[in-house]
Image (cartoon, rainbow, N blue to C red):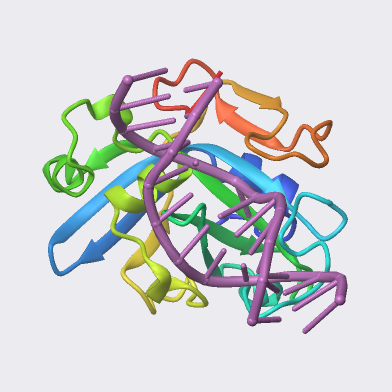
Length: 186
DNA sequence: CGTAAGATGAAG
DNA sequence: TTCATCTTACGG
């Protein structure tokens, strides 16, 4: 695999178009990554900004480590850790274009509209049945059902500010595939 | 301990 | 725009 996970900013852009696949007992679901955000230790909006805590420990592990966190009392979000070990960098996966296992996704999301299946960080996590048990495992070594494959090559990528944060709102560390319907917000 | 905020989503 | 809902982090 030629995927570069050495730096969260580079990786956030490069991960666009990659196919994310999860195999569970229920079946296989997959989708192309169409929206990402980069986070790092020099970034006041990052969970890793104040250093390692029990929650953010996976962010300081090797590249490819899966970081799943719980937020707003309801939702889980999923990140892929990048950068050298101990560097506190990660890429938040914000949206997918669903490819395989649409029925399973509709079932898990309890929704009919396919456009709303995976167009948000907590939505895709629910559609692909990613939970806290994936936290700390590595997406590159098959230690969970989750893995990456090469997918499509984005024709055009938009770089802009991140969503839902109150700090470092000037940083343009969000990337998405231009004109893709499954991006969470324009 | 007490408490406030949070990388969201759905409904009204 | 509001609210559901609860873990994490941090201060006392």
